[in-house]
Image (cartoon, rainbow, N blue to C red):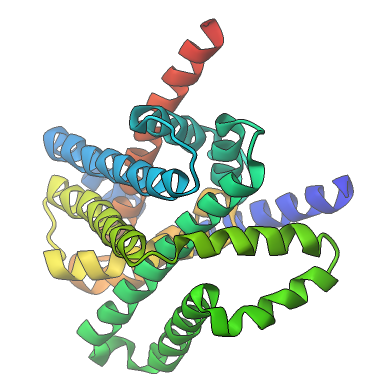
Length: 303
């Protein structure tokens, strides 16, 4: 198992290096440095604050699911856990953010906590897919050849979403019981049915759309900080797709996938160098927010 993990992580490093090499070959490095030299720090600080606000809303969505399962944790505590997990995720394999969040919650009621984290991801992905679909429609003349792939992916996720909450399709998930560790997975599925309340679903979707909006505003203010303008609506609709790309576990911390997404989607409007600079500054803004988590971790260890 250790050998397999080493090979996987080595593969990610290799893919990351190759993608970044290809991307940097396409941009003018001197032009990139010039863009960095003119960053307006006030707008960049505002951009980072947008991401921090998105993390706070993510904590509210997480609390919504936990409360429904009878696990009452103060919002500020969950916000603290999220920030600490965000920092640790910089050094952990894919999925490290969720693993760290569960670790900070404690070992009691682990199935309920696991199902709350799973639902947190489900609603996040659903919101991302809807943004991607709207972005596709907005720029159909440029992305028409990808339309079928995106539409099929969106419809499959919506189908899975409804199957997850419908009693009529419960028999499909009963198959889980026949798999290794299936009983545990099926118990988690049963917990998910406690989220069938229309109020919870509505609130979770509301939070999810706002979270992605705030992440997009992070990028929007970054483009303003380097004196470029890709358009507010375009940025709001494109960034969720880039966030999705960066979560695909084939590179280290999304490097290469994220940059490729920015260059592919934004180069036409602000140029390759500005698109690459925006991507790197977006990562920096996320990392700076995660540093708050590092400070909380240091404080926690001292206690």
